[in-house]
Image 1 (tube, helix red, strand yellow):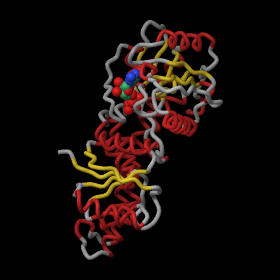
Image 2 (cartoon, rainbow, N blue to C red):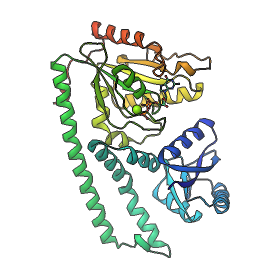
Image 3 (tube, protein in one colour):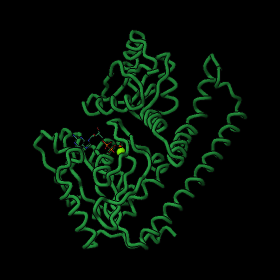
Image 4 (spheres, helix red, strand yellow):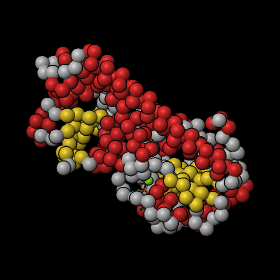
Length: 359
Ligand SMILES: Nc1nc2c(ncn2[C@@H]2O[C@H](COP(=O)(O)OP(=O)(O)OP(=O)(O)O)[C@@H](O)[C@H]2O)c(=O)[nH]1
Ligand SMILES: [Mg+2]
């Protein structure tokens, strides 16, 4: 059953659009968006006047859920839920809800579980404390001892998950080592969620991986040989999003790390977006690449969706020197892209020669 929701987001059109997409991808039905200038401060994570306005709106429209498009503290979520009398969640919880729905493989499930625990654990103590101060105790009516015990249990779970994921990381690392020995050339797709990575992956490999138009369709990494090219492989992985907390990237490290050890990275960008949104997503993607310590000299910007581009701005940025315009969906310039990949393979300029620091 779809849960109805009110989305609290920023005034800018692109924030609203992304918040709506996230909400739909999580399977919640937005009734209305409530726009504010600032989110994250004060008792409710909203200016008090705005929180009261929101209360009138929720009383009138009676949604099942309020989604606040920013990271909030446990205490802000608690107070806001209490004021509104309905459940409130923040942007990170919303993204985690999507990830939870999408995680299909064991590795992805472990990664999502780890991210969730890292989100929840620091919030539990605070939520319990606040609940005990209120009149009702309810399901959160633990004593301090039980809470500590529960938190210790969750921390042990975090450690176990980390260990399991570390094994996964080693396995990937060994596979990479093997590919290196076999002299395989690895091209990695990177970019904002929805940029068209999987569409391009399918076009270059004749695969049929899911493409839905919903956010975070892909959560795991797949590697396949590129059609008609000897020894050249391409990988598709989880997409990026702005305001991603560090621990979320950390949880997906075994997957995202493939980027760092690829011979060539294609940063796929949706070139049909409005200019301001395009640059926002571009810089959010650069931030993630930098966090993953990817060498930007090995990155080529792939300006995708030119079949539906109807704005005049052009790509120009010193961080990434090379770019190519394509349409993965309409098969425009894919031969040119393949020629570019082949050229990089032949000249070896972007080649990763070892992954020593790993061993
Ligand atoms: N018009 C047009 N649409 C495209 C093109 N490439 C991809 N799309 C559409 O963009 C949407 C997202 O495509 P995906 O390939 O799933 O994007 P992704 O980057 O893999 O997204 P995540 O897996 O969420 O990170 C889908 O609706 C695609 O059909 C293109 O060249 N032109
Ligand atoms: Mg994808």
